[in-house]
Image (cartoon, rainbow, N blue to C red):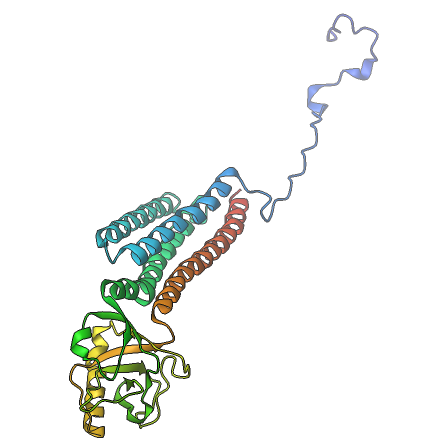
Length: 326
């Protein structure tokens, strides 16, 4: 039997250098230990971009809605409706993207991209409905009253006891003459779920056949009995301003209260006008403007915090499900 030939150049090697192939083992380099991944250490570019988008896009929608609805709805209602429709369209697109992502990953719903799609939809819903609510509340409580009052006239040095209420039907803000005060002795309250409180505004002089046409008002700030009126700036002895009641839904209840006072005290009430008693009328409007601005900026800060926390939570969840899927 012939021996296997030894390759040229290898004659000086030991005889046992060559072994049959079935007895040799291929020595493979050891595999590197797989690095442990956890927390946010395995975040990719997609996650960071998604986190920024989850904050910025909904925040822009919230800002646009709350700003336009609050400050532009009174004179340009079409602008607020346009912003609402655009926001609704953005929410619809986010919902479509989330549904498609869920359908694509039906076998592994927790895939990290699907997490971002769902979180993005949640952020859009929070921003859209939050913008609607905040914008409308700011409009009703702060902005609309300012526009309505400024559409009316402002009067100074009005004698509450001598003036005829019919002559001031177009009044929005009134500054009464020095010495004007609330006549606590003729206060009345009308109860209809809430207590609607009224008391006449009078001057130092009381002419004959006086008609009590100027009334200070307030809600749930009296018991309905005489000498018990604690509404507005009733404690300010120098107060002489009146802010006209602009809520038509309350007008009827205050008018009923003034009619009760007319019957109870035997006074004349010809053309009643109802005012919130304030220290200074024009200054009160300025304060109302400031409240509207502060309400807007505070809501901006709160929404930014909510969206930021939501994005941070989504980062951890997305990192966890990505690690798990890999």
